[in-house]
Length: 476
Image (cartoon, rainbow, N blue to C red; front, side, top):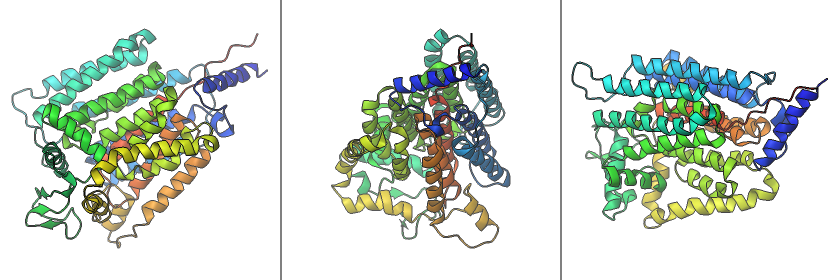
């Protein structure tokens, strides 16, 4: 009577062993559809929420954040959804199409970024033409045959690069300190100096957004505020294209390509398109935020977990070295390892050696300056009442500033739930990462568009990394 379902489950188990993953445990095999379904919904909701206020605090954006956080929680620990063997992939593709249409509407009806310098009667004509091309290619990727994706994915990446170049051309100098850090930090490195022992001009004329004692005589008294691997990426963009944001543009395209090719198929291609056309993604590019570098390396981590497991610890080590808060990824790495008890030590020492190899050469010349710029600076960052977070909303209502241990307690809860219930698969790792960081940001003292852009990207990555079970053979 249940032979078809048993055959489908057996085929899924075999496919997991072919991927180097263990046979499905109870928590892996309950429902392979729940994770991509809820991750897709969370990605679209959060992407449209960021469009409301550029990732700053509003009542409507807080409600959208709450809905997205709830959907991400359901993706990891929620109840199962009945297995729609015959129409499940088509339903997910339809959901991706609806999400893309909503995002395209946002891009067509609002400014794609905030610092554009435009002239002429039809200033957005070229951008909208390229956006229409991206929409057509995305539709073909979702609805067309498999062979079309071999040319469709590169075509989509090419159109995205043209869209990004349009943004960079028309927003050459946004008024933001992050771009100053990357330009001047890269120049300092190219001159053979230590970017972590320099200071920067205070372009805002006040010190409200920096910690106490970090502004004096118009200068910011800290060096490059991001880890060395981020500095190397920015320097590459500065050296080759004069603008470090070109490195972020290429990183975004490469991350989408990895999403599309991790599993292949229309689900991966559609998730990559959803990520590329996230409405505030062009705003993140314009403002020179460094999250695209993190998304690239996290996508490479999941790609290696599926296709090149021998490279996984080294790529994961680079991921840990790109941002300060990637330390939360360490416990989640257990979801990437088929046999954690046997593989954990080998994985950890290779990961740690890789992270240290790219970081120590920049830290050793002046350890004090390095620690001050990369670690202490961020600990002393002030509370931002305009953050899109529950703590900011609490303070905005007149309550005292809450203690700083709250976001770490929230992260501990998210990590515990993820390690308990998330599937031990690359997709489960990506979904658990999205839940963990969405929780951390939602209860943090600072949380803005770029923070949640990373969560949107990780949710798209979870969709792309999902391996759906094959339809069962009808019983004879």
